[in-house]
Image (cartoon, rainbow, N blue to C red; front, side):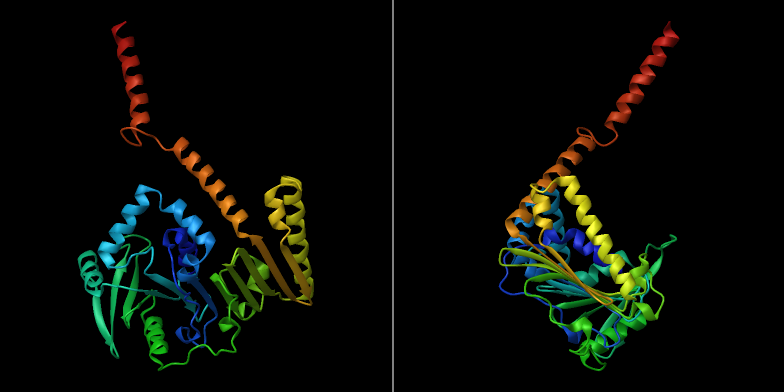
Length: 344
């Protein structure tokens, strides 16, 4: 499920338009025993200047427009304005575990169910209280085959999980039949105004986790928020490391990274200017990092990167009759050369 979170971040630029208010993390949506939570607030993205800039770049492509249109035809949801938020959480630290809760307007339940039946004839349903849960098989017949369960809750929520038992538990939380996060939990702390991407975890030091970085695997608490308030783009991070020595090592790594970028770009470069907004404080085993940047400068940097990526794609993507045209031309030239040799 953590991989899903990364995928969401990768496509967030497609989901930006005008919005009146945000859709922050709801503590009552998350189980009391949750170990980690990821929340993406698409309404807050749409309300940001940075979001408007990214939206303009991403939606300019004809292919993106087609995908958005097909998605709306299949689900009733217009991704540019109807998607409110996605919340992912788990009560364990496992690679493919967790629950995903999508909240959106204009969900066409009949279309979604019909599409599910058409694509997955093996699907089955069962009742859990007033909620109907569907279960089906993904990647059937491959080494990645697995079951997925899904359910609608209320008018605006759709839940998914690979674990049927966990999905039922999530429905119980939303129904008020099981305990949700306490407002005193570190996972439920109020995020900074304008946050549209939030990641939090607790108790990594008490059980086995799939994280590659040892300092995270052994840490007690992790928090990261990214967003925009007015014309200020910000990032805030907190890490309670396993020891004061580990925290000090992290501080040295960050300082070394800053020094490297300073040498790479030079102090007069805009990229280095933005890095000046990074502040870090270490107290015992606790590390707090904050960064602020000018929204216009960040938007300009994103536009430059988008332009370079477009040039790279244009250079590496074959044009004309298809991706195999150049290969076929080469093969044809070799065949003609061989025929000429035979004639000689």
